[in-house]
Image (cartoon, rainbow, N blue to C red; front, top):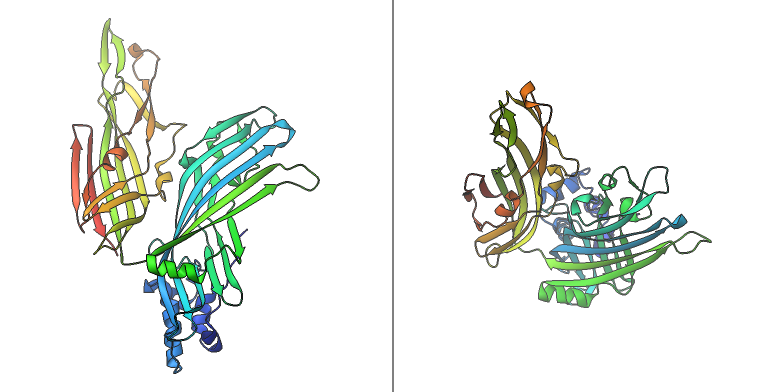
Length: 460
């Protein structure tokens, strides 16, 4: 559903077509930039405006004035709000989906004025994501709420399944140019952009029921909007952006879904709020968390021996490893938390049990829980005030099931079954006040059932 967008160089640069280095660099989609040495140079530069600066250098090498071309690094943030409705045939019911996706990119705004001394724009263009910089493509599910018709295989026996769990959805970052905004005097404004791909995980449906299609969120579709003329970003909007540091525009698209000769089977509404923000000074940080939590509140194993009731204490410890990365804008003057995400997540359960000679215990995955690997890529939120930092990790309450079978005849045949969980660790580390300082580390302990260490490192 997505199309590549190719952008034009300024008029003077086009006349200097011998600059094949620059033409190749600019004409390729923003996310596929490692196949060409020039594109690889952009990636290594760490500068969103790298191709524009190279263009200006070439113009100057030909003896021309390039001061009429300016480049401004930007952050582009798009909030996609999607509503889908589908009326299934044969009276099976209606499926609905409401979800929002936040995409964020590093970008460059190229401004071309009418002359070196003019303040009047002749054209401008924005291409995102720029491949150079941290967080060049960041995506997260802000909210999700679905009501799906699910049916038994090869049967008309169906029911409604409701979910608002973000872990029931998967996100795929775009592989092509995600957003393009252009304006020139002759053609006016043109905006073309599309979202990350979002898909409801069919495995989340209650077994043995299956999803039966109808909604795009079940087919891993991307949402796109193409606008020519108004509404769009205009030179006046760019003036406000440069003056105020940010500007946003709202685009909407509504469609009915149907087939020729049939009544309307559904509808889709897409709203995209596009915000442009200056990319000022930034720092990239990594946070590492290690620790463990012990679940000590589960019942002991009870058995009777020679008429005497006895108990065997049994607990489970969960070893945690988490890593996240985030961006701090304006670190020297007015630091602000920008974008963050989880890049690594590990959880290992360990049984604390001293009677292995009496019971054979096996740790199992519970059927209704998700693997911790699903946290990778999830948003890491935060706030910063001066040097004080708080990080809010995604909500995740993991658990493992335990099956203990008796080894001795006097214990009988009844097995011990229990679910153990680590429900406080993520909440506790999200409450900690940290110091935004390279090499900072803090450790804490909650009685005898939890310890943690949180470390910060500035990596760029």
